[in-house]
Image (cartoon, rainbow, N blue to C red; front, top):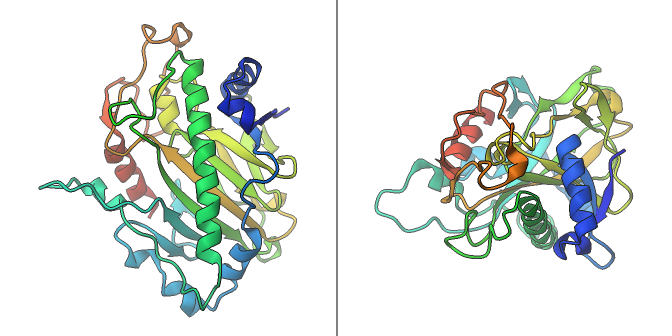
Length: 318
């Protein structure tokens, strides 16, 4: 059973809640999070209106027009593990100007602005997405901080010289899966792991599935108003395999209707150097090993710049 925890308890580092997060993350790489009443609402309806726009209006925001990989992605324009994704998406992220340096590395292209539809075309879309993103940022920081605490690392954020930087980097997308009756039975989004530390997701209808350690696929159906938090590859690398990246997919057989999901990927500051932990950092890591089954993961334990890794990962997708 996938447990549900409260955001307030995660923020407060309630010992019982942190234990639940630790166990769920270790066992299945996933838990549900209740962010409580009065928080930013999930912009499902206005997201549906975006994907209902005429194709020409969506293509005017094509991701191919953005050096920062932000904008509209049509069906089949993105791939996962070599398989075309049968979905549409709108990709966006935190809007930051790239740091001013004389010879910027390629990954600095991931800094930048978003492509938004004109307000007259879709009133309120940008405001709704930005309000939602601000709420998700609080969730990401709280969860990453709690997971770090489970590995005896109490202060990974909040300062420029902190292990993960002053604040997390994040990238996000709104995804639309059209009515399943138009597609053959099978994966609409192939089985994969996400590249960040943690991913926070909300969905307006089921369809997401997660693979357990025994190889069984189980549906992910969070309680009403809750989001899904699952582990990514950077957490696996940082913890030397103590926490494994959650393998998940969206399967057509699990879809009862068309589906909207909003996904936010959280990473350390792109400029930070991620140094995998050792048993000197946490006794829990004794015997932990990063597997080599994923081509992007490495088991050598070497430190690396987060942005350089993420840039390489983005190149595998688009």
